[in-house]
Image (cartoon, rainbow, N blue to C red; front, side, top):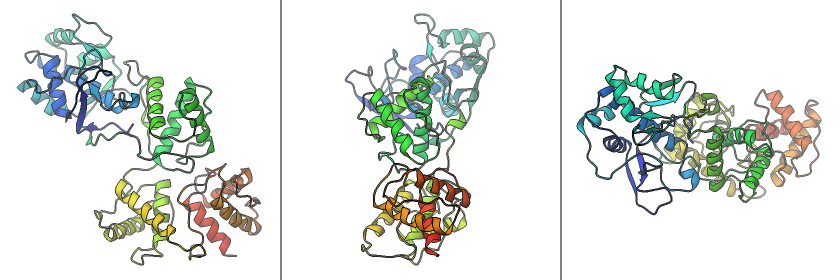
Length: 447
């Protein structure tokens, strides 16, 4: 799920029950709400009742979309038109003028529990023929006639601990899967989200080992937690978070958090706080910033137009200027902001540059960074290379423990990395990212 709820531009509606063969239609979010409201309630109701019901309808739809209720179950739509499951939608149905005006005014407002950011599972029913634990549509009319405001009505049915989020941003409604599988050595925001969600799931499924290192690096303990999750839920236990595993995690997480129930625990701001902002811009911090800085610094040896930048994990003016230059060279929108396209272009340019190096190439910055975080349990040439430099560094720096060159990222290697990170004053995660790689090689090469 995305970091904070946004109002989607469009909604994919399945015109039938979830498992029924039926057409999917895509409509704008405001058109969808106007249609639902015009089919669920009557335009001659008191305005406060109309507003309360429309807020419930907006919030219910956003809950379905934000929790990815249907995509996480393998469906290719956001919500259904079946009132047994969701709310009424009639293609090309009549829209009432006063309802349309209210929707245009409040379409980007929605209900949350106090301290939560998740749109409430704002269940409702007519209150005459069907009963539910949420809002009674006809009951809201009675309350409005007694002088209740829309907020009074909502609190009457959903409790006093609700609030309204006003003027939420409108954004894209792309699904949360990052597009490429996450595996050991992956890094970034999506990794941190998966770690947090697996730890919450582990409270209900204690066989899943808790992940202690809540960083943006996909390490061995993350892989082990993913494997156990996959075993429990009958997925291929390969330790890789592909699309099927990603959405199964989302589905189970929503279930254990009861995000799609009226009694939901909610999702607090701290649980979705980003390690860095996306897009990356001046003021951003984190492992993605480190990676961008390293990639740009490396590319600077091939493109003299790129200004030199330090690898700090902080996106300052020097990094912005380098991004400006890169975007100009590659025909991208020149704004100094690293959006998804710019990030991928920089990453691809780096990988292309590395792939074209001759085997015996010795660059001014030493061995080229392999393009992924090296973590405990890894093995291969990249591990062997960095162990050679760490071994040399430990001989001249008594605070760095000795390392054997084995090609396997063992506990001794991790201890040496911890010690180095402590010296550098950076996050101690025991993983070798672009900052650690560059510092180890640079420091060891000075002697």
